[in-house]
View 1 (cartoon, rainbow, N blue to C red):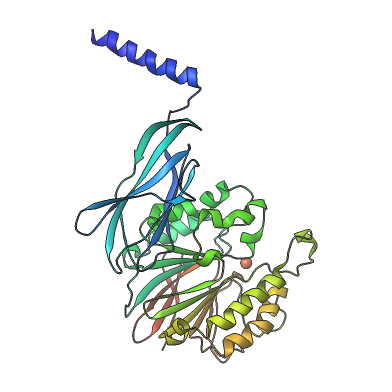
View 2: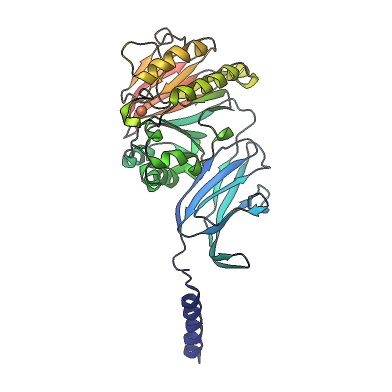
Length: 383
Ligand SMILES: [Fe+2]
């Protein structure tokens, strides 16, 4: 009897699937999650599934109660695609929350007929919201990984993830972005595996992130503050000014095929920077840190963009009392004392084979440069 019932139910499933052309097998999480835009009261969680779904987040509050979060735009609940982005707001600062992904597969989506398939429920992960005030902040900086995610993974085995507040990817994490899959292989899967589901990261655009067709859609996979590649935020004692240095060559360079307009873009950014350095969060911060892929310093024989940035951004930053600039791009470890950059700030340039761990507290900013094995290469204190 049991066998007949089983055959009947199996037949029903097969008939339904074949008659509707529905593919409901192997509905899985494909990438993520990764946290973006962590604030004192909000965070954005991003992940992908292999088939279209309606995304949601089951949030567990500190008192154990749960809240189910879905987003909507223009009156419609978000969903229907495979890249999922859920923003949660109304959170408390410096609070630990637990969450799990919820993806409801869409088998059929028509005007008067929507069929749902399986619901994928992810494991519970926790994150801490940003404190509204804190005497210290810990962060790790990666740059110029150029898709060699194994190098990043090797280092991450030695990184004290639990004590980090956030991570920075300071550009050139990939060679170019032609196919979105490159993003996952380049660094996103590794980041998600080790930390990105519980610690937020800031993805700063390098010159290589501007290359390839899908580079135009880079923002789609992340959540940029103010929807721009340049912005600022305060975390603990540090105010971070994140800059986008754009491409490295002249806009009319033949490699850009007439599609580059970075001089105009950088001048727009400069206009914003002039306002930024006059803002209260900037001026009132204990430390002002500039994060930018291409270093901004006065030097001979620099590439076009670095010369442009030096001549235009350097004098503005010089007036701004910057405590530290962290850069990348040259694939070499170098450090410039504040009287050697031309603009009054110390500059730490991290290579493509090292990682920087920074701890800023009431007394100092301490930066430790480590190799892929986690061994210390150099240390710097900024009082
Ligand atoms: Fe670069």
